[in-house]
Amino acid sequence: MPQPLDYLKETASQTAGPYVHIGLIPAMAGFDIFEKNFSNVLVTPNTQGERITLEGKVIDGSGSPLRDVLLEIWQANAAGRYNHPADRSAGALEEDFRGWGRGGSDFESGVVTFVTIKPGGIADKSGRKCAPHVNVWIVARGINIGLNTRLYFSDEEAANAADPVLNLVEPAVRRKTLIATRSERAGKVVYSFTINLQGPDETVFFDV
Amino acid sequence: MNAQAPASRDPRLNRPEPFTPPLGDGGFFQRDRSVHPPAYAPGYKSSVLRSPRQALLSIENSVSEITGPVFGHNDLGPLDNDLIRNYAKDGDPVGERIIVHGRVLDETGRGVPNTLVEFWQANAGGRYRHRKDTYLAPVDPNFGGCGRALTDDTGYYYFRTVKPGPYPWRNFVNSWRPAHIHFSVFGSGFAQRLITQMYFEGDPLIPVCPILTTIPDKDALDRLVAPLDLNASTPFDSLAYRFDIVLRGQRSTYFENRTAGN
Ligand SMILES: [Fe+2]
Image: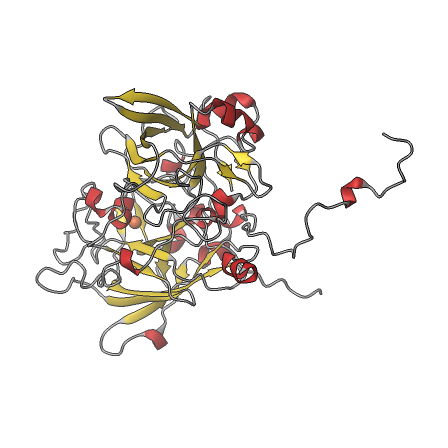
């Protein structure tokens, strides 16, 4: 017998269930308990960068929006820098921009929104430039392990065409499932997205 | 090619970067999906329409995955890890008083320090304080059912609560959830993000739960069951249960990298 490798095993995932709001966004469950709450608003008045709203739905295999889904996003700041010590790139850090938020879908419409800034492009480990993107994590009743995907921006065509992750997506027709569409509404910039869990336009999910 | 050039080594051997230790690039270990439930698990009916059917696209960890949100004590309130007191209006909640404690570790066995752990649960009667829960067991006016804690330098966390009750749910006609507490854990990178549920040793509903039995690996399922920990119990006050949580391992931590670089 060789020496045993004594790695531990990752704890098994379990669904977040229908009442995920209680733990993570109690105001949506219908009560107020914590002094400080996490939210879907990532910006403060001091945050640098273009203000944007991300607005979308998660759609099930019957074409219906999930009305009990929770999304989290994780993103770099406008200079392309993540607020984390493992990001040692050159962009300026903003102490009060955490770059993370969570939001639940509306119980009627299924719409999820985030108020944030458009992130800058980031460099991967080999120094290649990656297109600006927002990392998304999805949990809900019926989702047994959190789903990872990304949102890229429709007005970044050149950067998207060169992005090393988008270029891994085959067949190429599926790349569009990762692109949020820019529009302006009452003077505000909105990026709209649809995350399809199944079907011919199933969104690309990553094993990260 | 210039025929005059001296014969050189295979260019693939001219590594542009120094050779780094095998656990040295900061990426997470590849996720072992065999310890997790599959997305499509028809015994848990809600998964049927909510499970992706295409293969996941495997991508190497970039800075987007090895980084993640950082939390601190400023994000928490003083009662956040005390579910007996954090929603008490005119007394303590009804139920068996318990302490839940343990460590957040990674697959190499290291404690994960300063990471956010969030938890939520039904009350002692199996009822959630949630606008969508209509189970006939009553809401407890003194129980909110959620809390959170930050692990210490060794990855240790603890909180106090009442033991949740089992509850019925619509899957089969007579499906009941074993008593459980939902956990959300971050780790240091967004690729470690995990939601799971903790169960209680000896609960007869465990082997018949359609959600718990989505996990195909018996050992992985058993690791979600917290043992009674009499040593950590408080005499004449609370029983204790121990629940360790393991997140994905990382090829060296950024703390080590930082020390070397400074
Ligand atoms: Fe539950």
